[in-house]
Length: 135
Image 1 (cartoon, helix red, strand yellow):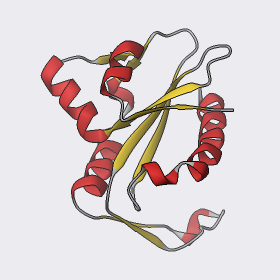
Image 2 (image 1 turned 60 degrees about the vertical axis):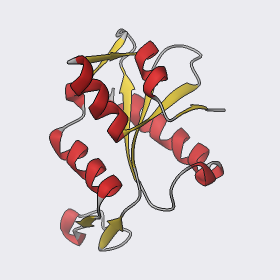
Image 3 (image 1 turned 45 degrees about the vertical axis):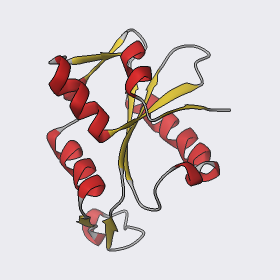
Image 4 (image 1 turned 45 degrees about the horizontal axis):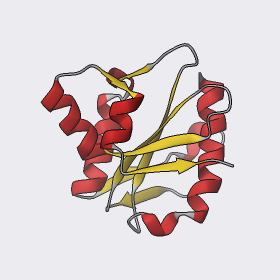
C-alpha cells in the first residue's frame, strides 16, 4: 500500500501543478489509496493528527516546523498554511486513472451525519470537491 500511495502521490503532484487554479492559494493535502482488494476506504485510516492539521489549515492557520535532524534534511524550516484542507483518494485497480478530492469539512460531515466508518466510491463521488484524472 505504501508503494501504491507513493506512486499516486507522485502522479498527483504533476496533476496538481497543472490544476492549482482550482484550489485556494494555500492548503494542506493528505493522499490516501484504497487497497486493490477493497471496495471501501476505512475512515480510521485518516488519523486524528491528519484530520486536525487539515481542519486547522482550512479554518485557521496551521503552523508546522520541520526538523533538519532527520538525516534527510528539509526544504525549509517550517510551513504556515491557511486556506484549505483536502483528502485526495484513489481506488487502486487496473486502469483506474480517476481520483476524488474531498474537502475535510465534507468528510467530517459525512462521518458525523451517517455514522459510517467506511467510505465507498459512490459516496466519495457524492461528497467530493472535484474528480480528477491522471495521465
